[in-house]
Each structure stands twice: as C-alpha cells, then as structure tokens.
Length: 318
Image 1 (cartoon, one colour):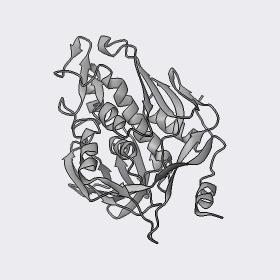
Image 2 (cartoon, helix red, strand yellow; image 1 turned 45 degrees about the vertical axis):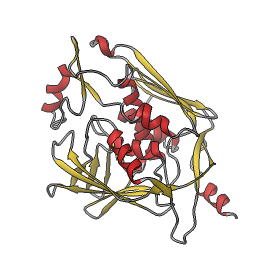
Image 3 (cartoon, helix red, strand yellow; image 1 turned 60 degrees about the horizontal axis):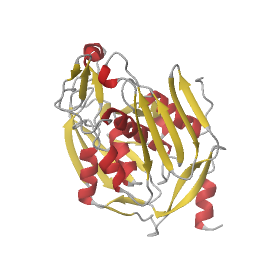
Image 4 (cartoon, one colour; image 1 turned 180 degrees about the vertical axis):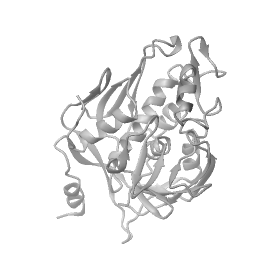
C-alpha cells in the first residue's frame, strides 16, 4: 500500500466523510510563539507557548506535562467556551486559538500553557476577544512544511461531506450539505437587542487565497449583551471581561466605540465554529469539512454536537 493509500485508509471513520488529498503538505509553525495575557472567565494571567511539531502529530495542549489532544474526544460541555479535559486536567476557552491555527493552516503544533498558580485547570488568554493577535503572531514566525520523524513530508487530507448532516436543539440549528468548496453561512437573532436582531453573514473559503480568514474572520470580536453580564459573573464567568476584549450590546445601543464590520457578531460566530470544528482534525489533517454549512443561533455545544455527528457518534439531540 502506498503512503497516500495508508493515510486515507487510516482516516476511514464515518460514512458521512470521505478523506481526500488536498494537494498540499502538512505544515507547522516556523518558530516558537509566546504570548501572555488575561483570561476571560477566570480573569487570571496565562502564558501560551506554541512550538513546532512533527508531521502527523496534529495539534495538542501541554499543560503541567499532561498532553491533551485538540480532539472532540476530549471536549466537554461548558458555558460560553470550549473546554478540553483529560486525566483530571482542563484547558478552556481554546476556540479562538484553535480557529487561528486551523484558519492559517498550522496542522501540527504543541501548545504549552503555563498558569500563574497551581490550578489543575488552565485557560487560553482572550486578548481583544478575536483571533487577530494569534494570526499576527503566526504570520510573524511563518508557516513551514512539517516533516515526520523520518524526515519525510506528509500529504494533507481534508474531510469531504458525503451526506447531509443536521443537528438542532430548540431553534438552534446546524445543517451541512455536500459541496466542492467550503462555504459557511451563520445567522443570529437576539430580538431583545435591536442591533443584534436577525442578521446573517455568508462566506466562501478559497483554496488559493489564504488571506480570507485572516482579513475577514480573525479580527471579529466576541460579543455579549450588557443586561446579561451580571448573571454571567454571578455564575463565576467572564471575571476578566471588559470593553477591551468584547463587544457589548445593550437594548439602547452599542457600548463600544464601534464595530470592525457591520456583521462582526456573525463573523465571530464563524470564527468560533471554525475553532470548534477544528476538533475533527486528526494526525495533521484538516478539521474543517469541505461542505456547505448553514448555522442559525448556534453556540459551542451545538458546534461540538455537529463534530460528533461527523465522527459517527450517535446523537442524543433532536
């Protein structure tokens, strides 16, 4: 069996997906990235170091010498963020960083997290609430072809959707359909806030223009509704939240100086979706499926359920 044939054979996991060559080689970062910042939910300082990794190793977190793969197998439901847990150790708010890595084509890397205390849980810094700082840091060190332990490069595979997939909970829905390209449409609707009432943003990801993600998606910041802030803080969340790292809407208008684009909230939802769906990646493959994806009023839990469907797990949602 050829190396390509063995790789494709190893990726057979679900009748919904066909793993196909992308015509590209797996990549890693060109040097170490180190960034320190305040976290959104705990409000603590956290340092992240991203290291180059061998082809086929994929993306994984290294926290207190515990290795946690960036895989749906280790994702657990948590409020307002995506959390990975393994052997009693937890890393949360991973979605923006993973989105930046997926969006810029960093297929293999080790993500080391250093806490300011001895807490068994860690959190990725929020920075300005978008993925822009991560993308800028990746662009600064560059992306390079990853080699395996034998000094060989590896072909990058992508998951192509072969059948329609639909997950929903209440009026929150994600539907995906077979397609020759990646397209994502995301809709939100918060009728209690006029500026967040029904709106959509649609995007097509080009295989030849790698700048689309960095320019159109990565700068979009997370957002919240002012009237719900105290409720979230009472639940022990967003202790580090501020106008510096989130767009805050209230019923009477926007509290920040302005939006980076008219559809910034919808674009940020796509940013989150890419980060969460990157958990479908394995062994240096592409996580984002080649499909026409339509999402409405989704969130991290629904995104994770969508990935579980792709992985062939039986859904408990209807």
